[in-house]
Image (cartoon, rainbow, N blue to C red; front, side, top):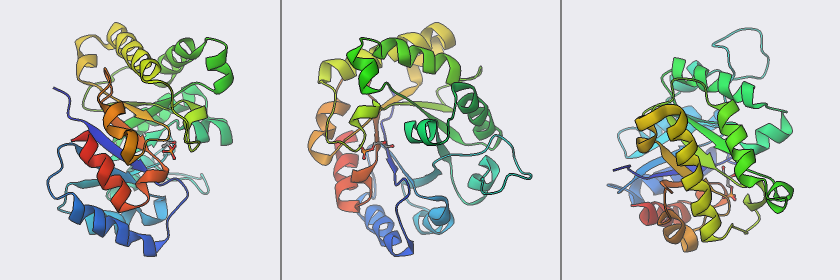
Length: 246
Ligand SMILES: O=C[C@H](O)COP(=O)(O)O
């Protein structure tokens, strides 16, 4: 039985004043029925981890460099994330693939870096609207999985997040049938490559998840929780999504 995961991605949002939302989330989720993770901007990681210490809310990073340290101005390593209190890191988000030209190979290298630092890697995949319209969604995700996942993926070190690019921040979501089809497809691909281990890997859906649609989406075949952007910024909204996952 896979324990569901409700993961929040604050993206480039949040100043110190917003740490009050973590206090509220911790108070609202004393004993959640799923794993709960918030990935703030790097500037808030350490203070957020300190405030969430001892609670059911874990914190994670939004990206990491492939190297542990060195002359890479502006970058943050997986070791630094772990040092700041992170237990997980989002990798290969479509915004990073688009804004920073991250290739599948770069995402695979970052995944290995995350493991080196003891972090859970949450690897994102997903098609554009043009790719879906062209009937290529399954193929695109297969290709991304093949290139972005290194050897050695296990249920304990990997989560895959399916985020159709056109559903992110738009209020639009695929049909339930399309979400289920993709998740079943991903499980099949992961099983072909990683064998029985794939049965325990958690597959998240992301893209316009809200308290109002979370329970329905999380109830679909092979959907093991969500990666949530906008609706993770307010504790009241995210607590509703945590409830839906539990
Ligand atoms: O990482 C989160 C996703 O990009 C989803 O964002 P959203 O919930 O604001 O659509």
